Image (cartoon, rainbow, N blue to C red; front, side, top):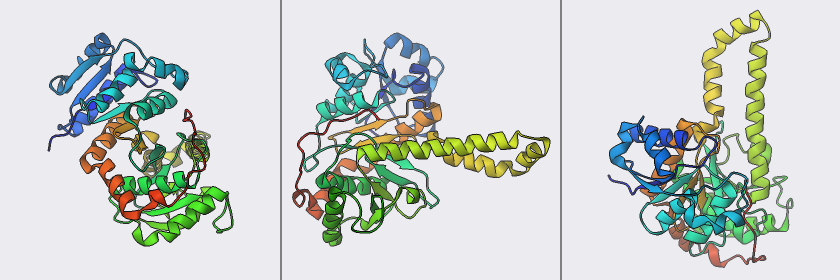
Length: 356
């Protein structure tokens, strides 16, 4: 089965062209159906392609004269969008020259450009940033929003639940994902008015939902494997994500120090190496790389800025999977079937995207 081309912002990320091209080449070695539109400095891209002959017949280069810097404000980046590798990659999706865009660049700028260029889907007020996170269960967990909207009302949270469940059905091959709202407690009386209203709306529509709504969950439960989709506002979600990532690094560094503390510890490391390697694999963010902006009229995937080639390849694979499974059509169908778009009332008219 052929796939639409994937536009890759070759200039984004901490290491830019080398890692982005290497990651795309790795993705193509795994799936030779992938084809690319490589957007960025033509000279540098051509030089990087010299090391990856498998990319030459599967890639086209689109020269972009400018780059979005990591610390650039979204409003500033928007003014230069038509000349930047990030903006041109997104515009290729809008024009139908690519099926999806992948970038490891500035998150806030990517969100702003994608929303302005592609617009939100009918029935969706604001797009949300969703990512897969490891759990103790058999599948990863989808969490959203992770930073696109710092404040959300009940209507936003309900829409996020529908979009997150559609993504979980694709990413984890689940027939009926278990969805919960992140809160400070599991009791129905806990949390903000928006959380309680969203919970009431989802419970009332339970029979029309393409997922199972289980009420509230707390932050210490999100990785236990008891929930497939965790829904929250972008402010809380971004804090939770970075706390989980920080805890993972803390555990990894603590084990490293412990195993190096004495000769006996080093021997113990050799004995337990298979288990520690499994832990390292499970906690490596590159194995879960590829956050998705859900709710847009197009597929845009955000790779972590520090991702290595394996991480970039995984982000490309996420984009391809969403194209294959027609994520946008699934969300549209789920919204129509549930009727939720008309059941909640938006209390705010503007919430800006923030850089995650």
